[in-house]
Amino acid sequence: MTQVATPDTAIPDFDGVTVDDVHGRPMFLRQKGQELWAEFDDPDSPAPPDSRPRIERRVTLITGSHNQQIFWYGTGQQRLLGQLPGAYLVAEQRWIPRRMAVLHPPTQAPLSETGHWNSTCLVCHTTHGKPQFDTPFGSQALDTQRVDTTVAEFGISCESCHGPSEEHVRANSDPLRRYRLHLTGAADTTTVQPARLDPKRASQVCGQCHGVWEFYDERGERFANSQGLPFRPGHELSDTRFVAQPTANADSPTMQALLQDDSRFIRDAFWADGTVRVSGREYNGLLESPCYRNATHADRTLTCFSCHTLHKADDDTRPVEQWRVGQVSMPAVTNDACLQCHEPIRANPTAHTHHKADSPGSSCYNCHMPYTSYGLLKTIRSHTIGSPTVRESVETGRPNACNLCHLDRTLGWTGQALQQWYGTAEMPLSEDERTVAGSLLWLLKGDAGQRAIIAQAMAWPPAQQAAGTDWMAPHLAQLLDDPYDAVRFGASRSMRTLPGLTGFVFDFVSGPQARRQAQLRTMATWDQARPRPGRAAPELLMTASGDVDIPRILALLKQRNNRAMLLRE
Image (cartoon, rainbow, N blue to C red):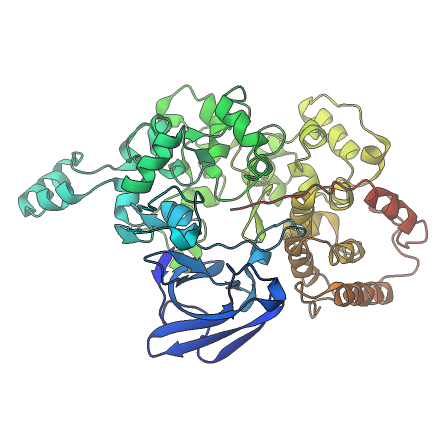
């Protein structure tokens, strides 16, 4: 996750490359021997963005390798690092302005990230990082700060999960000791094996990074600044930091302060019921899961290791490139991870799921871990395991699993199905909720995070299979002019999965005029390809003749939730 920047570790080419538009100005990349250099606008200059002085800096570190690469440069002020204004998207093989790589309020100007690696990123993207600002980060101008940041190792190495290992290395230099432990199966007391810990502390090893948390007080922050975070694998995580749970610790002064601090955007990280909605924070989701909270047997309690393995098993035949995406263990690829506890369902899954046994509707994950978390320009599965209800969608805004697959169905339809199958009580719904597909209510009326979720859902193969695709293009087209860059990105990516639009050309970074032209092209392509008469579906905002019901769409758009949102991974 953190690498020294070289031509071998950087995925994009730096050798004489010009990145045309980074917040309105070009960025020039150069390779000097094995060194990477960049010329760009000084992000810390007080001058207006279009007149900031140009600076050239050596790129020293890289964060990321799977989805994005973020590049850091030496500022010349001790070990203080700045961030290049451009980020590289790996799958798309292109540079974009760094701000557009996250779901970021369009009215908020790009922020300087100088010092952010030293103060924040190194906590989870290196091993045993110590920021070592001479005064707390942000308490004085960076040009007067003295910074002597150090790390034990770049990246997430052995000691991140197994704890300090000097004694482990010394003791195991004795081959007789190693053989004795191997043959007896005894635990090695010189290191921490997370899988041998009790379920609570095992998951805390992951939760030290994959969680929304805060220091209890300034004393903890000062200690971390000088000595690094005090948590060690096997310790109790809550002893040294406050893990945010808006429901479980709602009355905590620390939680209330976090939710009320507009500069932190902590409240954006959670749905209204306290379910986490940003990626990289799966530990918070685990804590809210009944499978974790209500377990009565320690050996059957859900932990991170119930589904994930950080070392590819010897009998796992998948290529490393496939396994490393999520590091999911082989049993967890299927329903086996769930059925080991919910064994009675195994004999006749259709009786429980009401879907064909081999269909996406009989996948435990699709119904109980839907894609309602967002980050890195994509959605991931919720790690708060629960059963779908219409109430969760109405009261929290979180799309339920049924309507994320059956994108063409209303909340009323879902409520009736759940009542018929499981006896789930129906609830009063508004006229819109009874007559308009849930996906379109979130797409038109929802906040930016909801719109991003639905934009990606329209490219999900099970959803396309269940709901059809002939109605999606006009609604994705509406999102091509969304004020949020990330929403436009998701909509354009999904557009290219639709029949007849696989060659769709659209740059989500482009300005308003180009966006509207893309909308017109989309509508013309869709209108030419659709059958006559078209699909009459009022719930999909199509008229009796199959045309788009523009007045109804405009009426729903007027009810859009336009609050500023920042979903940081």
